[in-house]
Length: 213
Image (cartoon, rainbow, N blue to C red; front, side, top):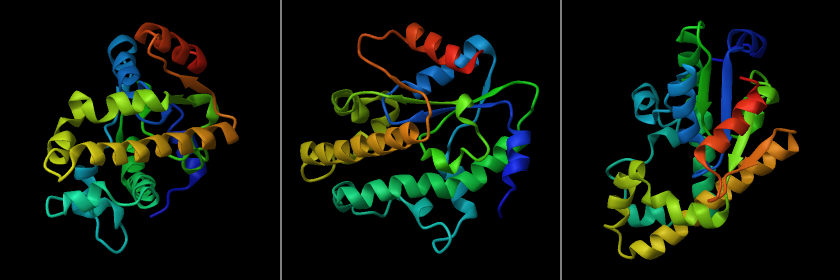
């Protein structure tokens, strides 16, 4: 199924998109928009969509699963893993956009999802998108040790060399972040770096100013 981009552009005029890499504050900003400004949001829940997919049309959405060799999964080549990170988001978008269209239109929606901007620019203009990013060091310091990633870390700790597995995983997340940011810059989308010195309130203020809300 392909939904007409012009139709999407009209129906999703109330959607604002936080793009970018990991550990950049996207989830934190979403919570602020919901709590303080009354926005709605939509979680990118892969497990919700997987039962409606098949391995031929949606190969990336089949992974990861409990039967994997976790050593091989987390330590596969960076090119292969980063390709999967992009592919899984692209495969999910068909379902995600359909869910967006089902949401009430009386309140604005804030989305935090890192994706190549070319995939959404046809219906989400750059004025309603911002790319949040942080340094490689911050990604390496935070990514696998976030509370919402505890399950991932628990699995990694079962691998033969958890420290090496985390180091390889960090390379994947850093590269993913770089590629999304570079694509946003190419497309003229505003970028905003989250530094350790930047407070949540300061970042929230800058994002709001960009969106004009």
